[in-house]
Image (cartoon, rainbow, N blue to C red; front, side):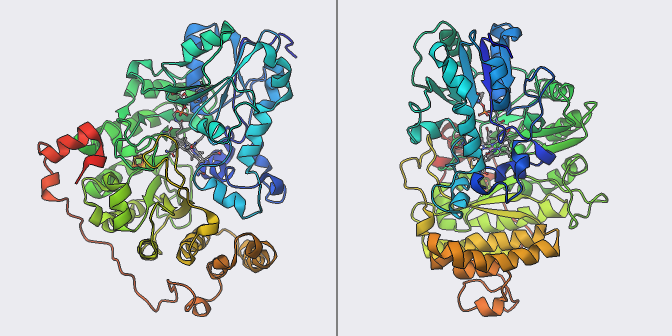
Length: 564
Ligand code: B12
Ligand code: SF4
């Protein structure tokens, strides 16, 4: 044990650091599964992480690695340690002056996460929240608090403020937003023992301020773009102008991952197709190809994973997907029997579909479809899905239920689009609207599970029924699940959530559709055809094809919110 410790200690919780099975969706589950039943759900892997011989973390979320790199330029690397909660006692000691913690989703109150935990009862803490609490209330932090400053940063730092836990947890400073240009002066002030601001907001940094990564991040995450600019009103990066990280820096960061033992690289972005994109989000095929080739060529890289993407570029230029497929799918770690790849590989991309309602789409996210018009959104989704699936890209698509002012008619339109996608190869992830800080909808009310309508419940469980059917691996587990659902409903679900979930839940449990037909909106018993079909071609409105027109000038200056 280092009684004196290191001057600067950085740490992240285990459930936000684990890269179990190189599976990003498994880690996402941790934000939704309840800690109380973790043993029953066999999620002991949620805390499985690896350490270096000296006890430091082998991998932590990329944001914390960025902070480490910034600090290492100013302070001696010997003064800095990066670890998990179980090793904090090795590094926090009498010499420690500042502890910086990373928060991705520390209380589990962002979209999707709080919804699922509520199915298990009131006040049930998701694994993720319990693990963060274990980190921030660690006894060694309490013991040494009189001589150290506690700083928490990351995309979920706002949650601590929102839940008024800053004082209870003795957090000196919460860092929101991008931190490149504030980390060093803030940590210097902390080292001098000066009082810190209660919270601080980082602005978008100059490209030169984004440092090279020195060590391995969780999933071998390497940022390729930052920001977006499509302007969705519920999104925190909506109006942040997109920028691409220079290829040499990306490749150097990939090498740092491999040097740290990673054989898999996760290309992190809000939208893959924004990488070196032209004006008005025009995808840059040569640059994307060069990116994949350069990453795959780094010795030691066996797998390449992706985070987010938008649908419209796949429709603007379908051959883009075809061109990227040999490396994007060929180097993917994921496999599925429905893939036509010789090794059954498929690539995963998180895509925000959000709604089938053109009205809501127009109101809250019209830039997402650009250069297509909001009215073309269902066609864009269907055509994009068709193109992606054809090349073995199986996207994980989020939908938002309970956007402000959503009516039954809007939900019906989402159900229709969902129905049209029933044979697609994908995962549909229903989430509830959460007004995130720093978004244009931050003052609006969040959607509440207790207020979901019959149609919204149908949407919610129909998604999961489709996912179960697509990802099911064992008939026995399926059978047990089917039998367990009515038991859950009558013992707990009915009491916690109410009778509105009953028939949708029975669809999830594979009750015959003919028995549900009169109770639910959709009918999967083949008696009804879909309102939508995959279009042959989705035309780009002529006036949006030429960059010199005034509408596009507005787009670049003010974000897509200004689009007609
Ligand atoms: C990669 C990623 C993931 C991966 C890997 C996460 C991991 N543990 O490494 C996966 C897919 C697993 C994942 C899961 C989830 N994610 Co995620 N994820 C991302 C993504 C795309 C990139 C993160 C990243 O590496 N960014 C690049 C780094 C450099 O940025 P950064 O982390 O923000 O760090 C900067 C600052 O925050 C700050 N900073 C970071 N840490 C610290 C620490 C200190 C001390 C200081 C001072 C500063 C500081 O400095 C950094 C440099 O500016 C972001 C979106 C984005 N582009 O950021 C979403 C994002 C962070 N995720 C989000 C969400 C909602 C989730 C999930 C809850 C999704 C879900 N509903 O299930 C889960 C939760 C996971 C869990 N264990 O609980 C939201 C967060 C919203 C919020 N917190 O309120 C984001 C912003 C996406 C979005 N647009 O909504 N995610
Ligand atoms: S497309 Fe919309 S939701 Fe996605 S990152 Fe851009 S602004 Fe956010």
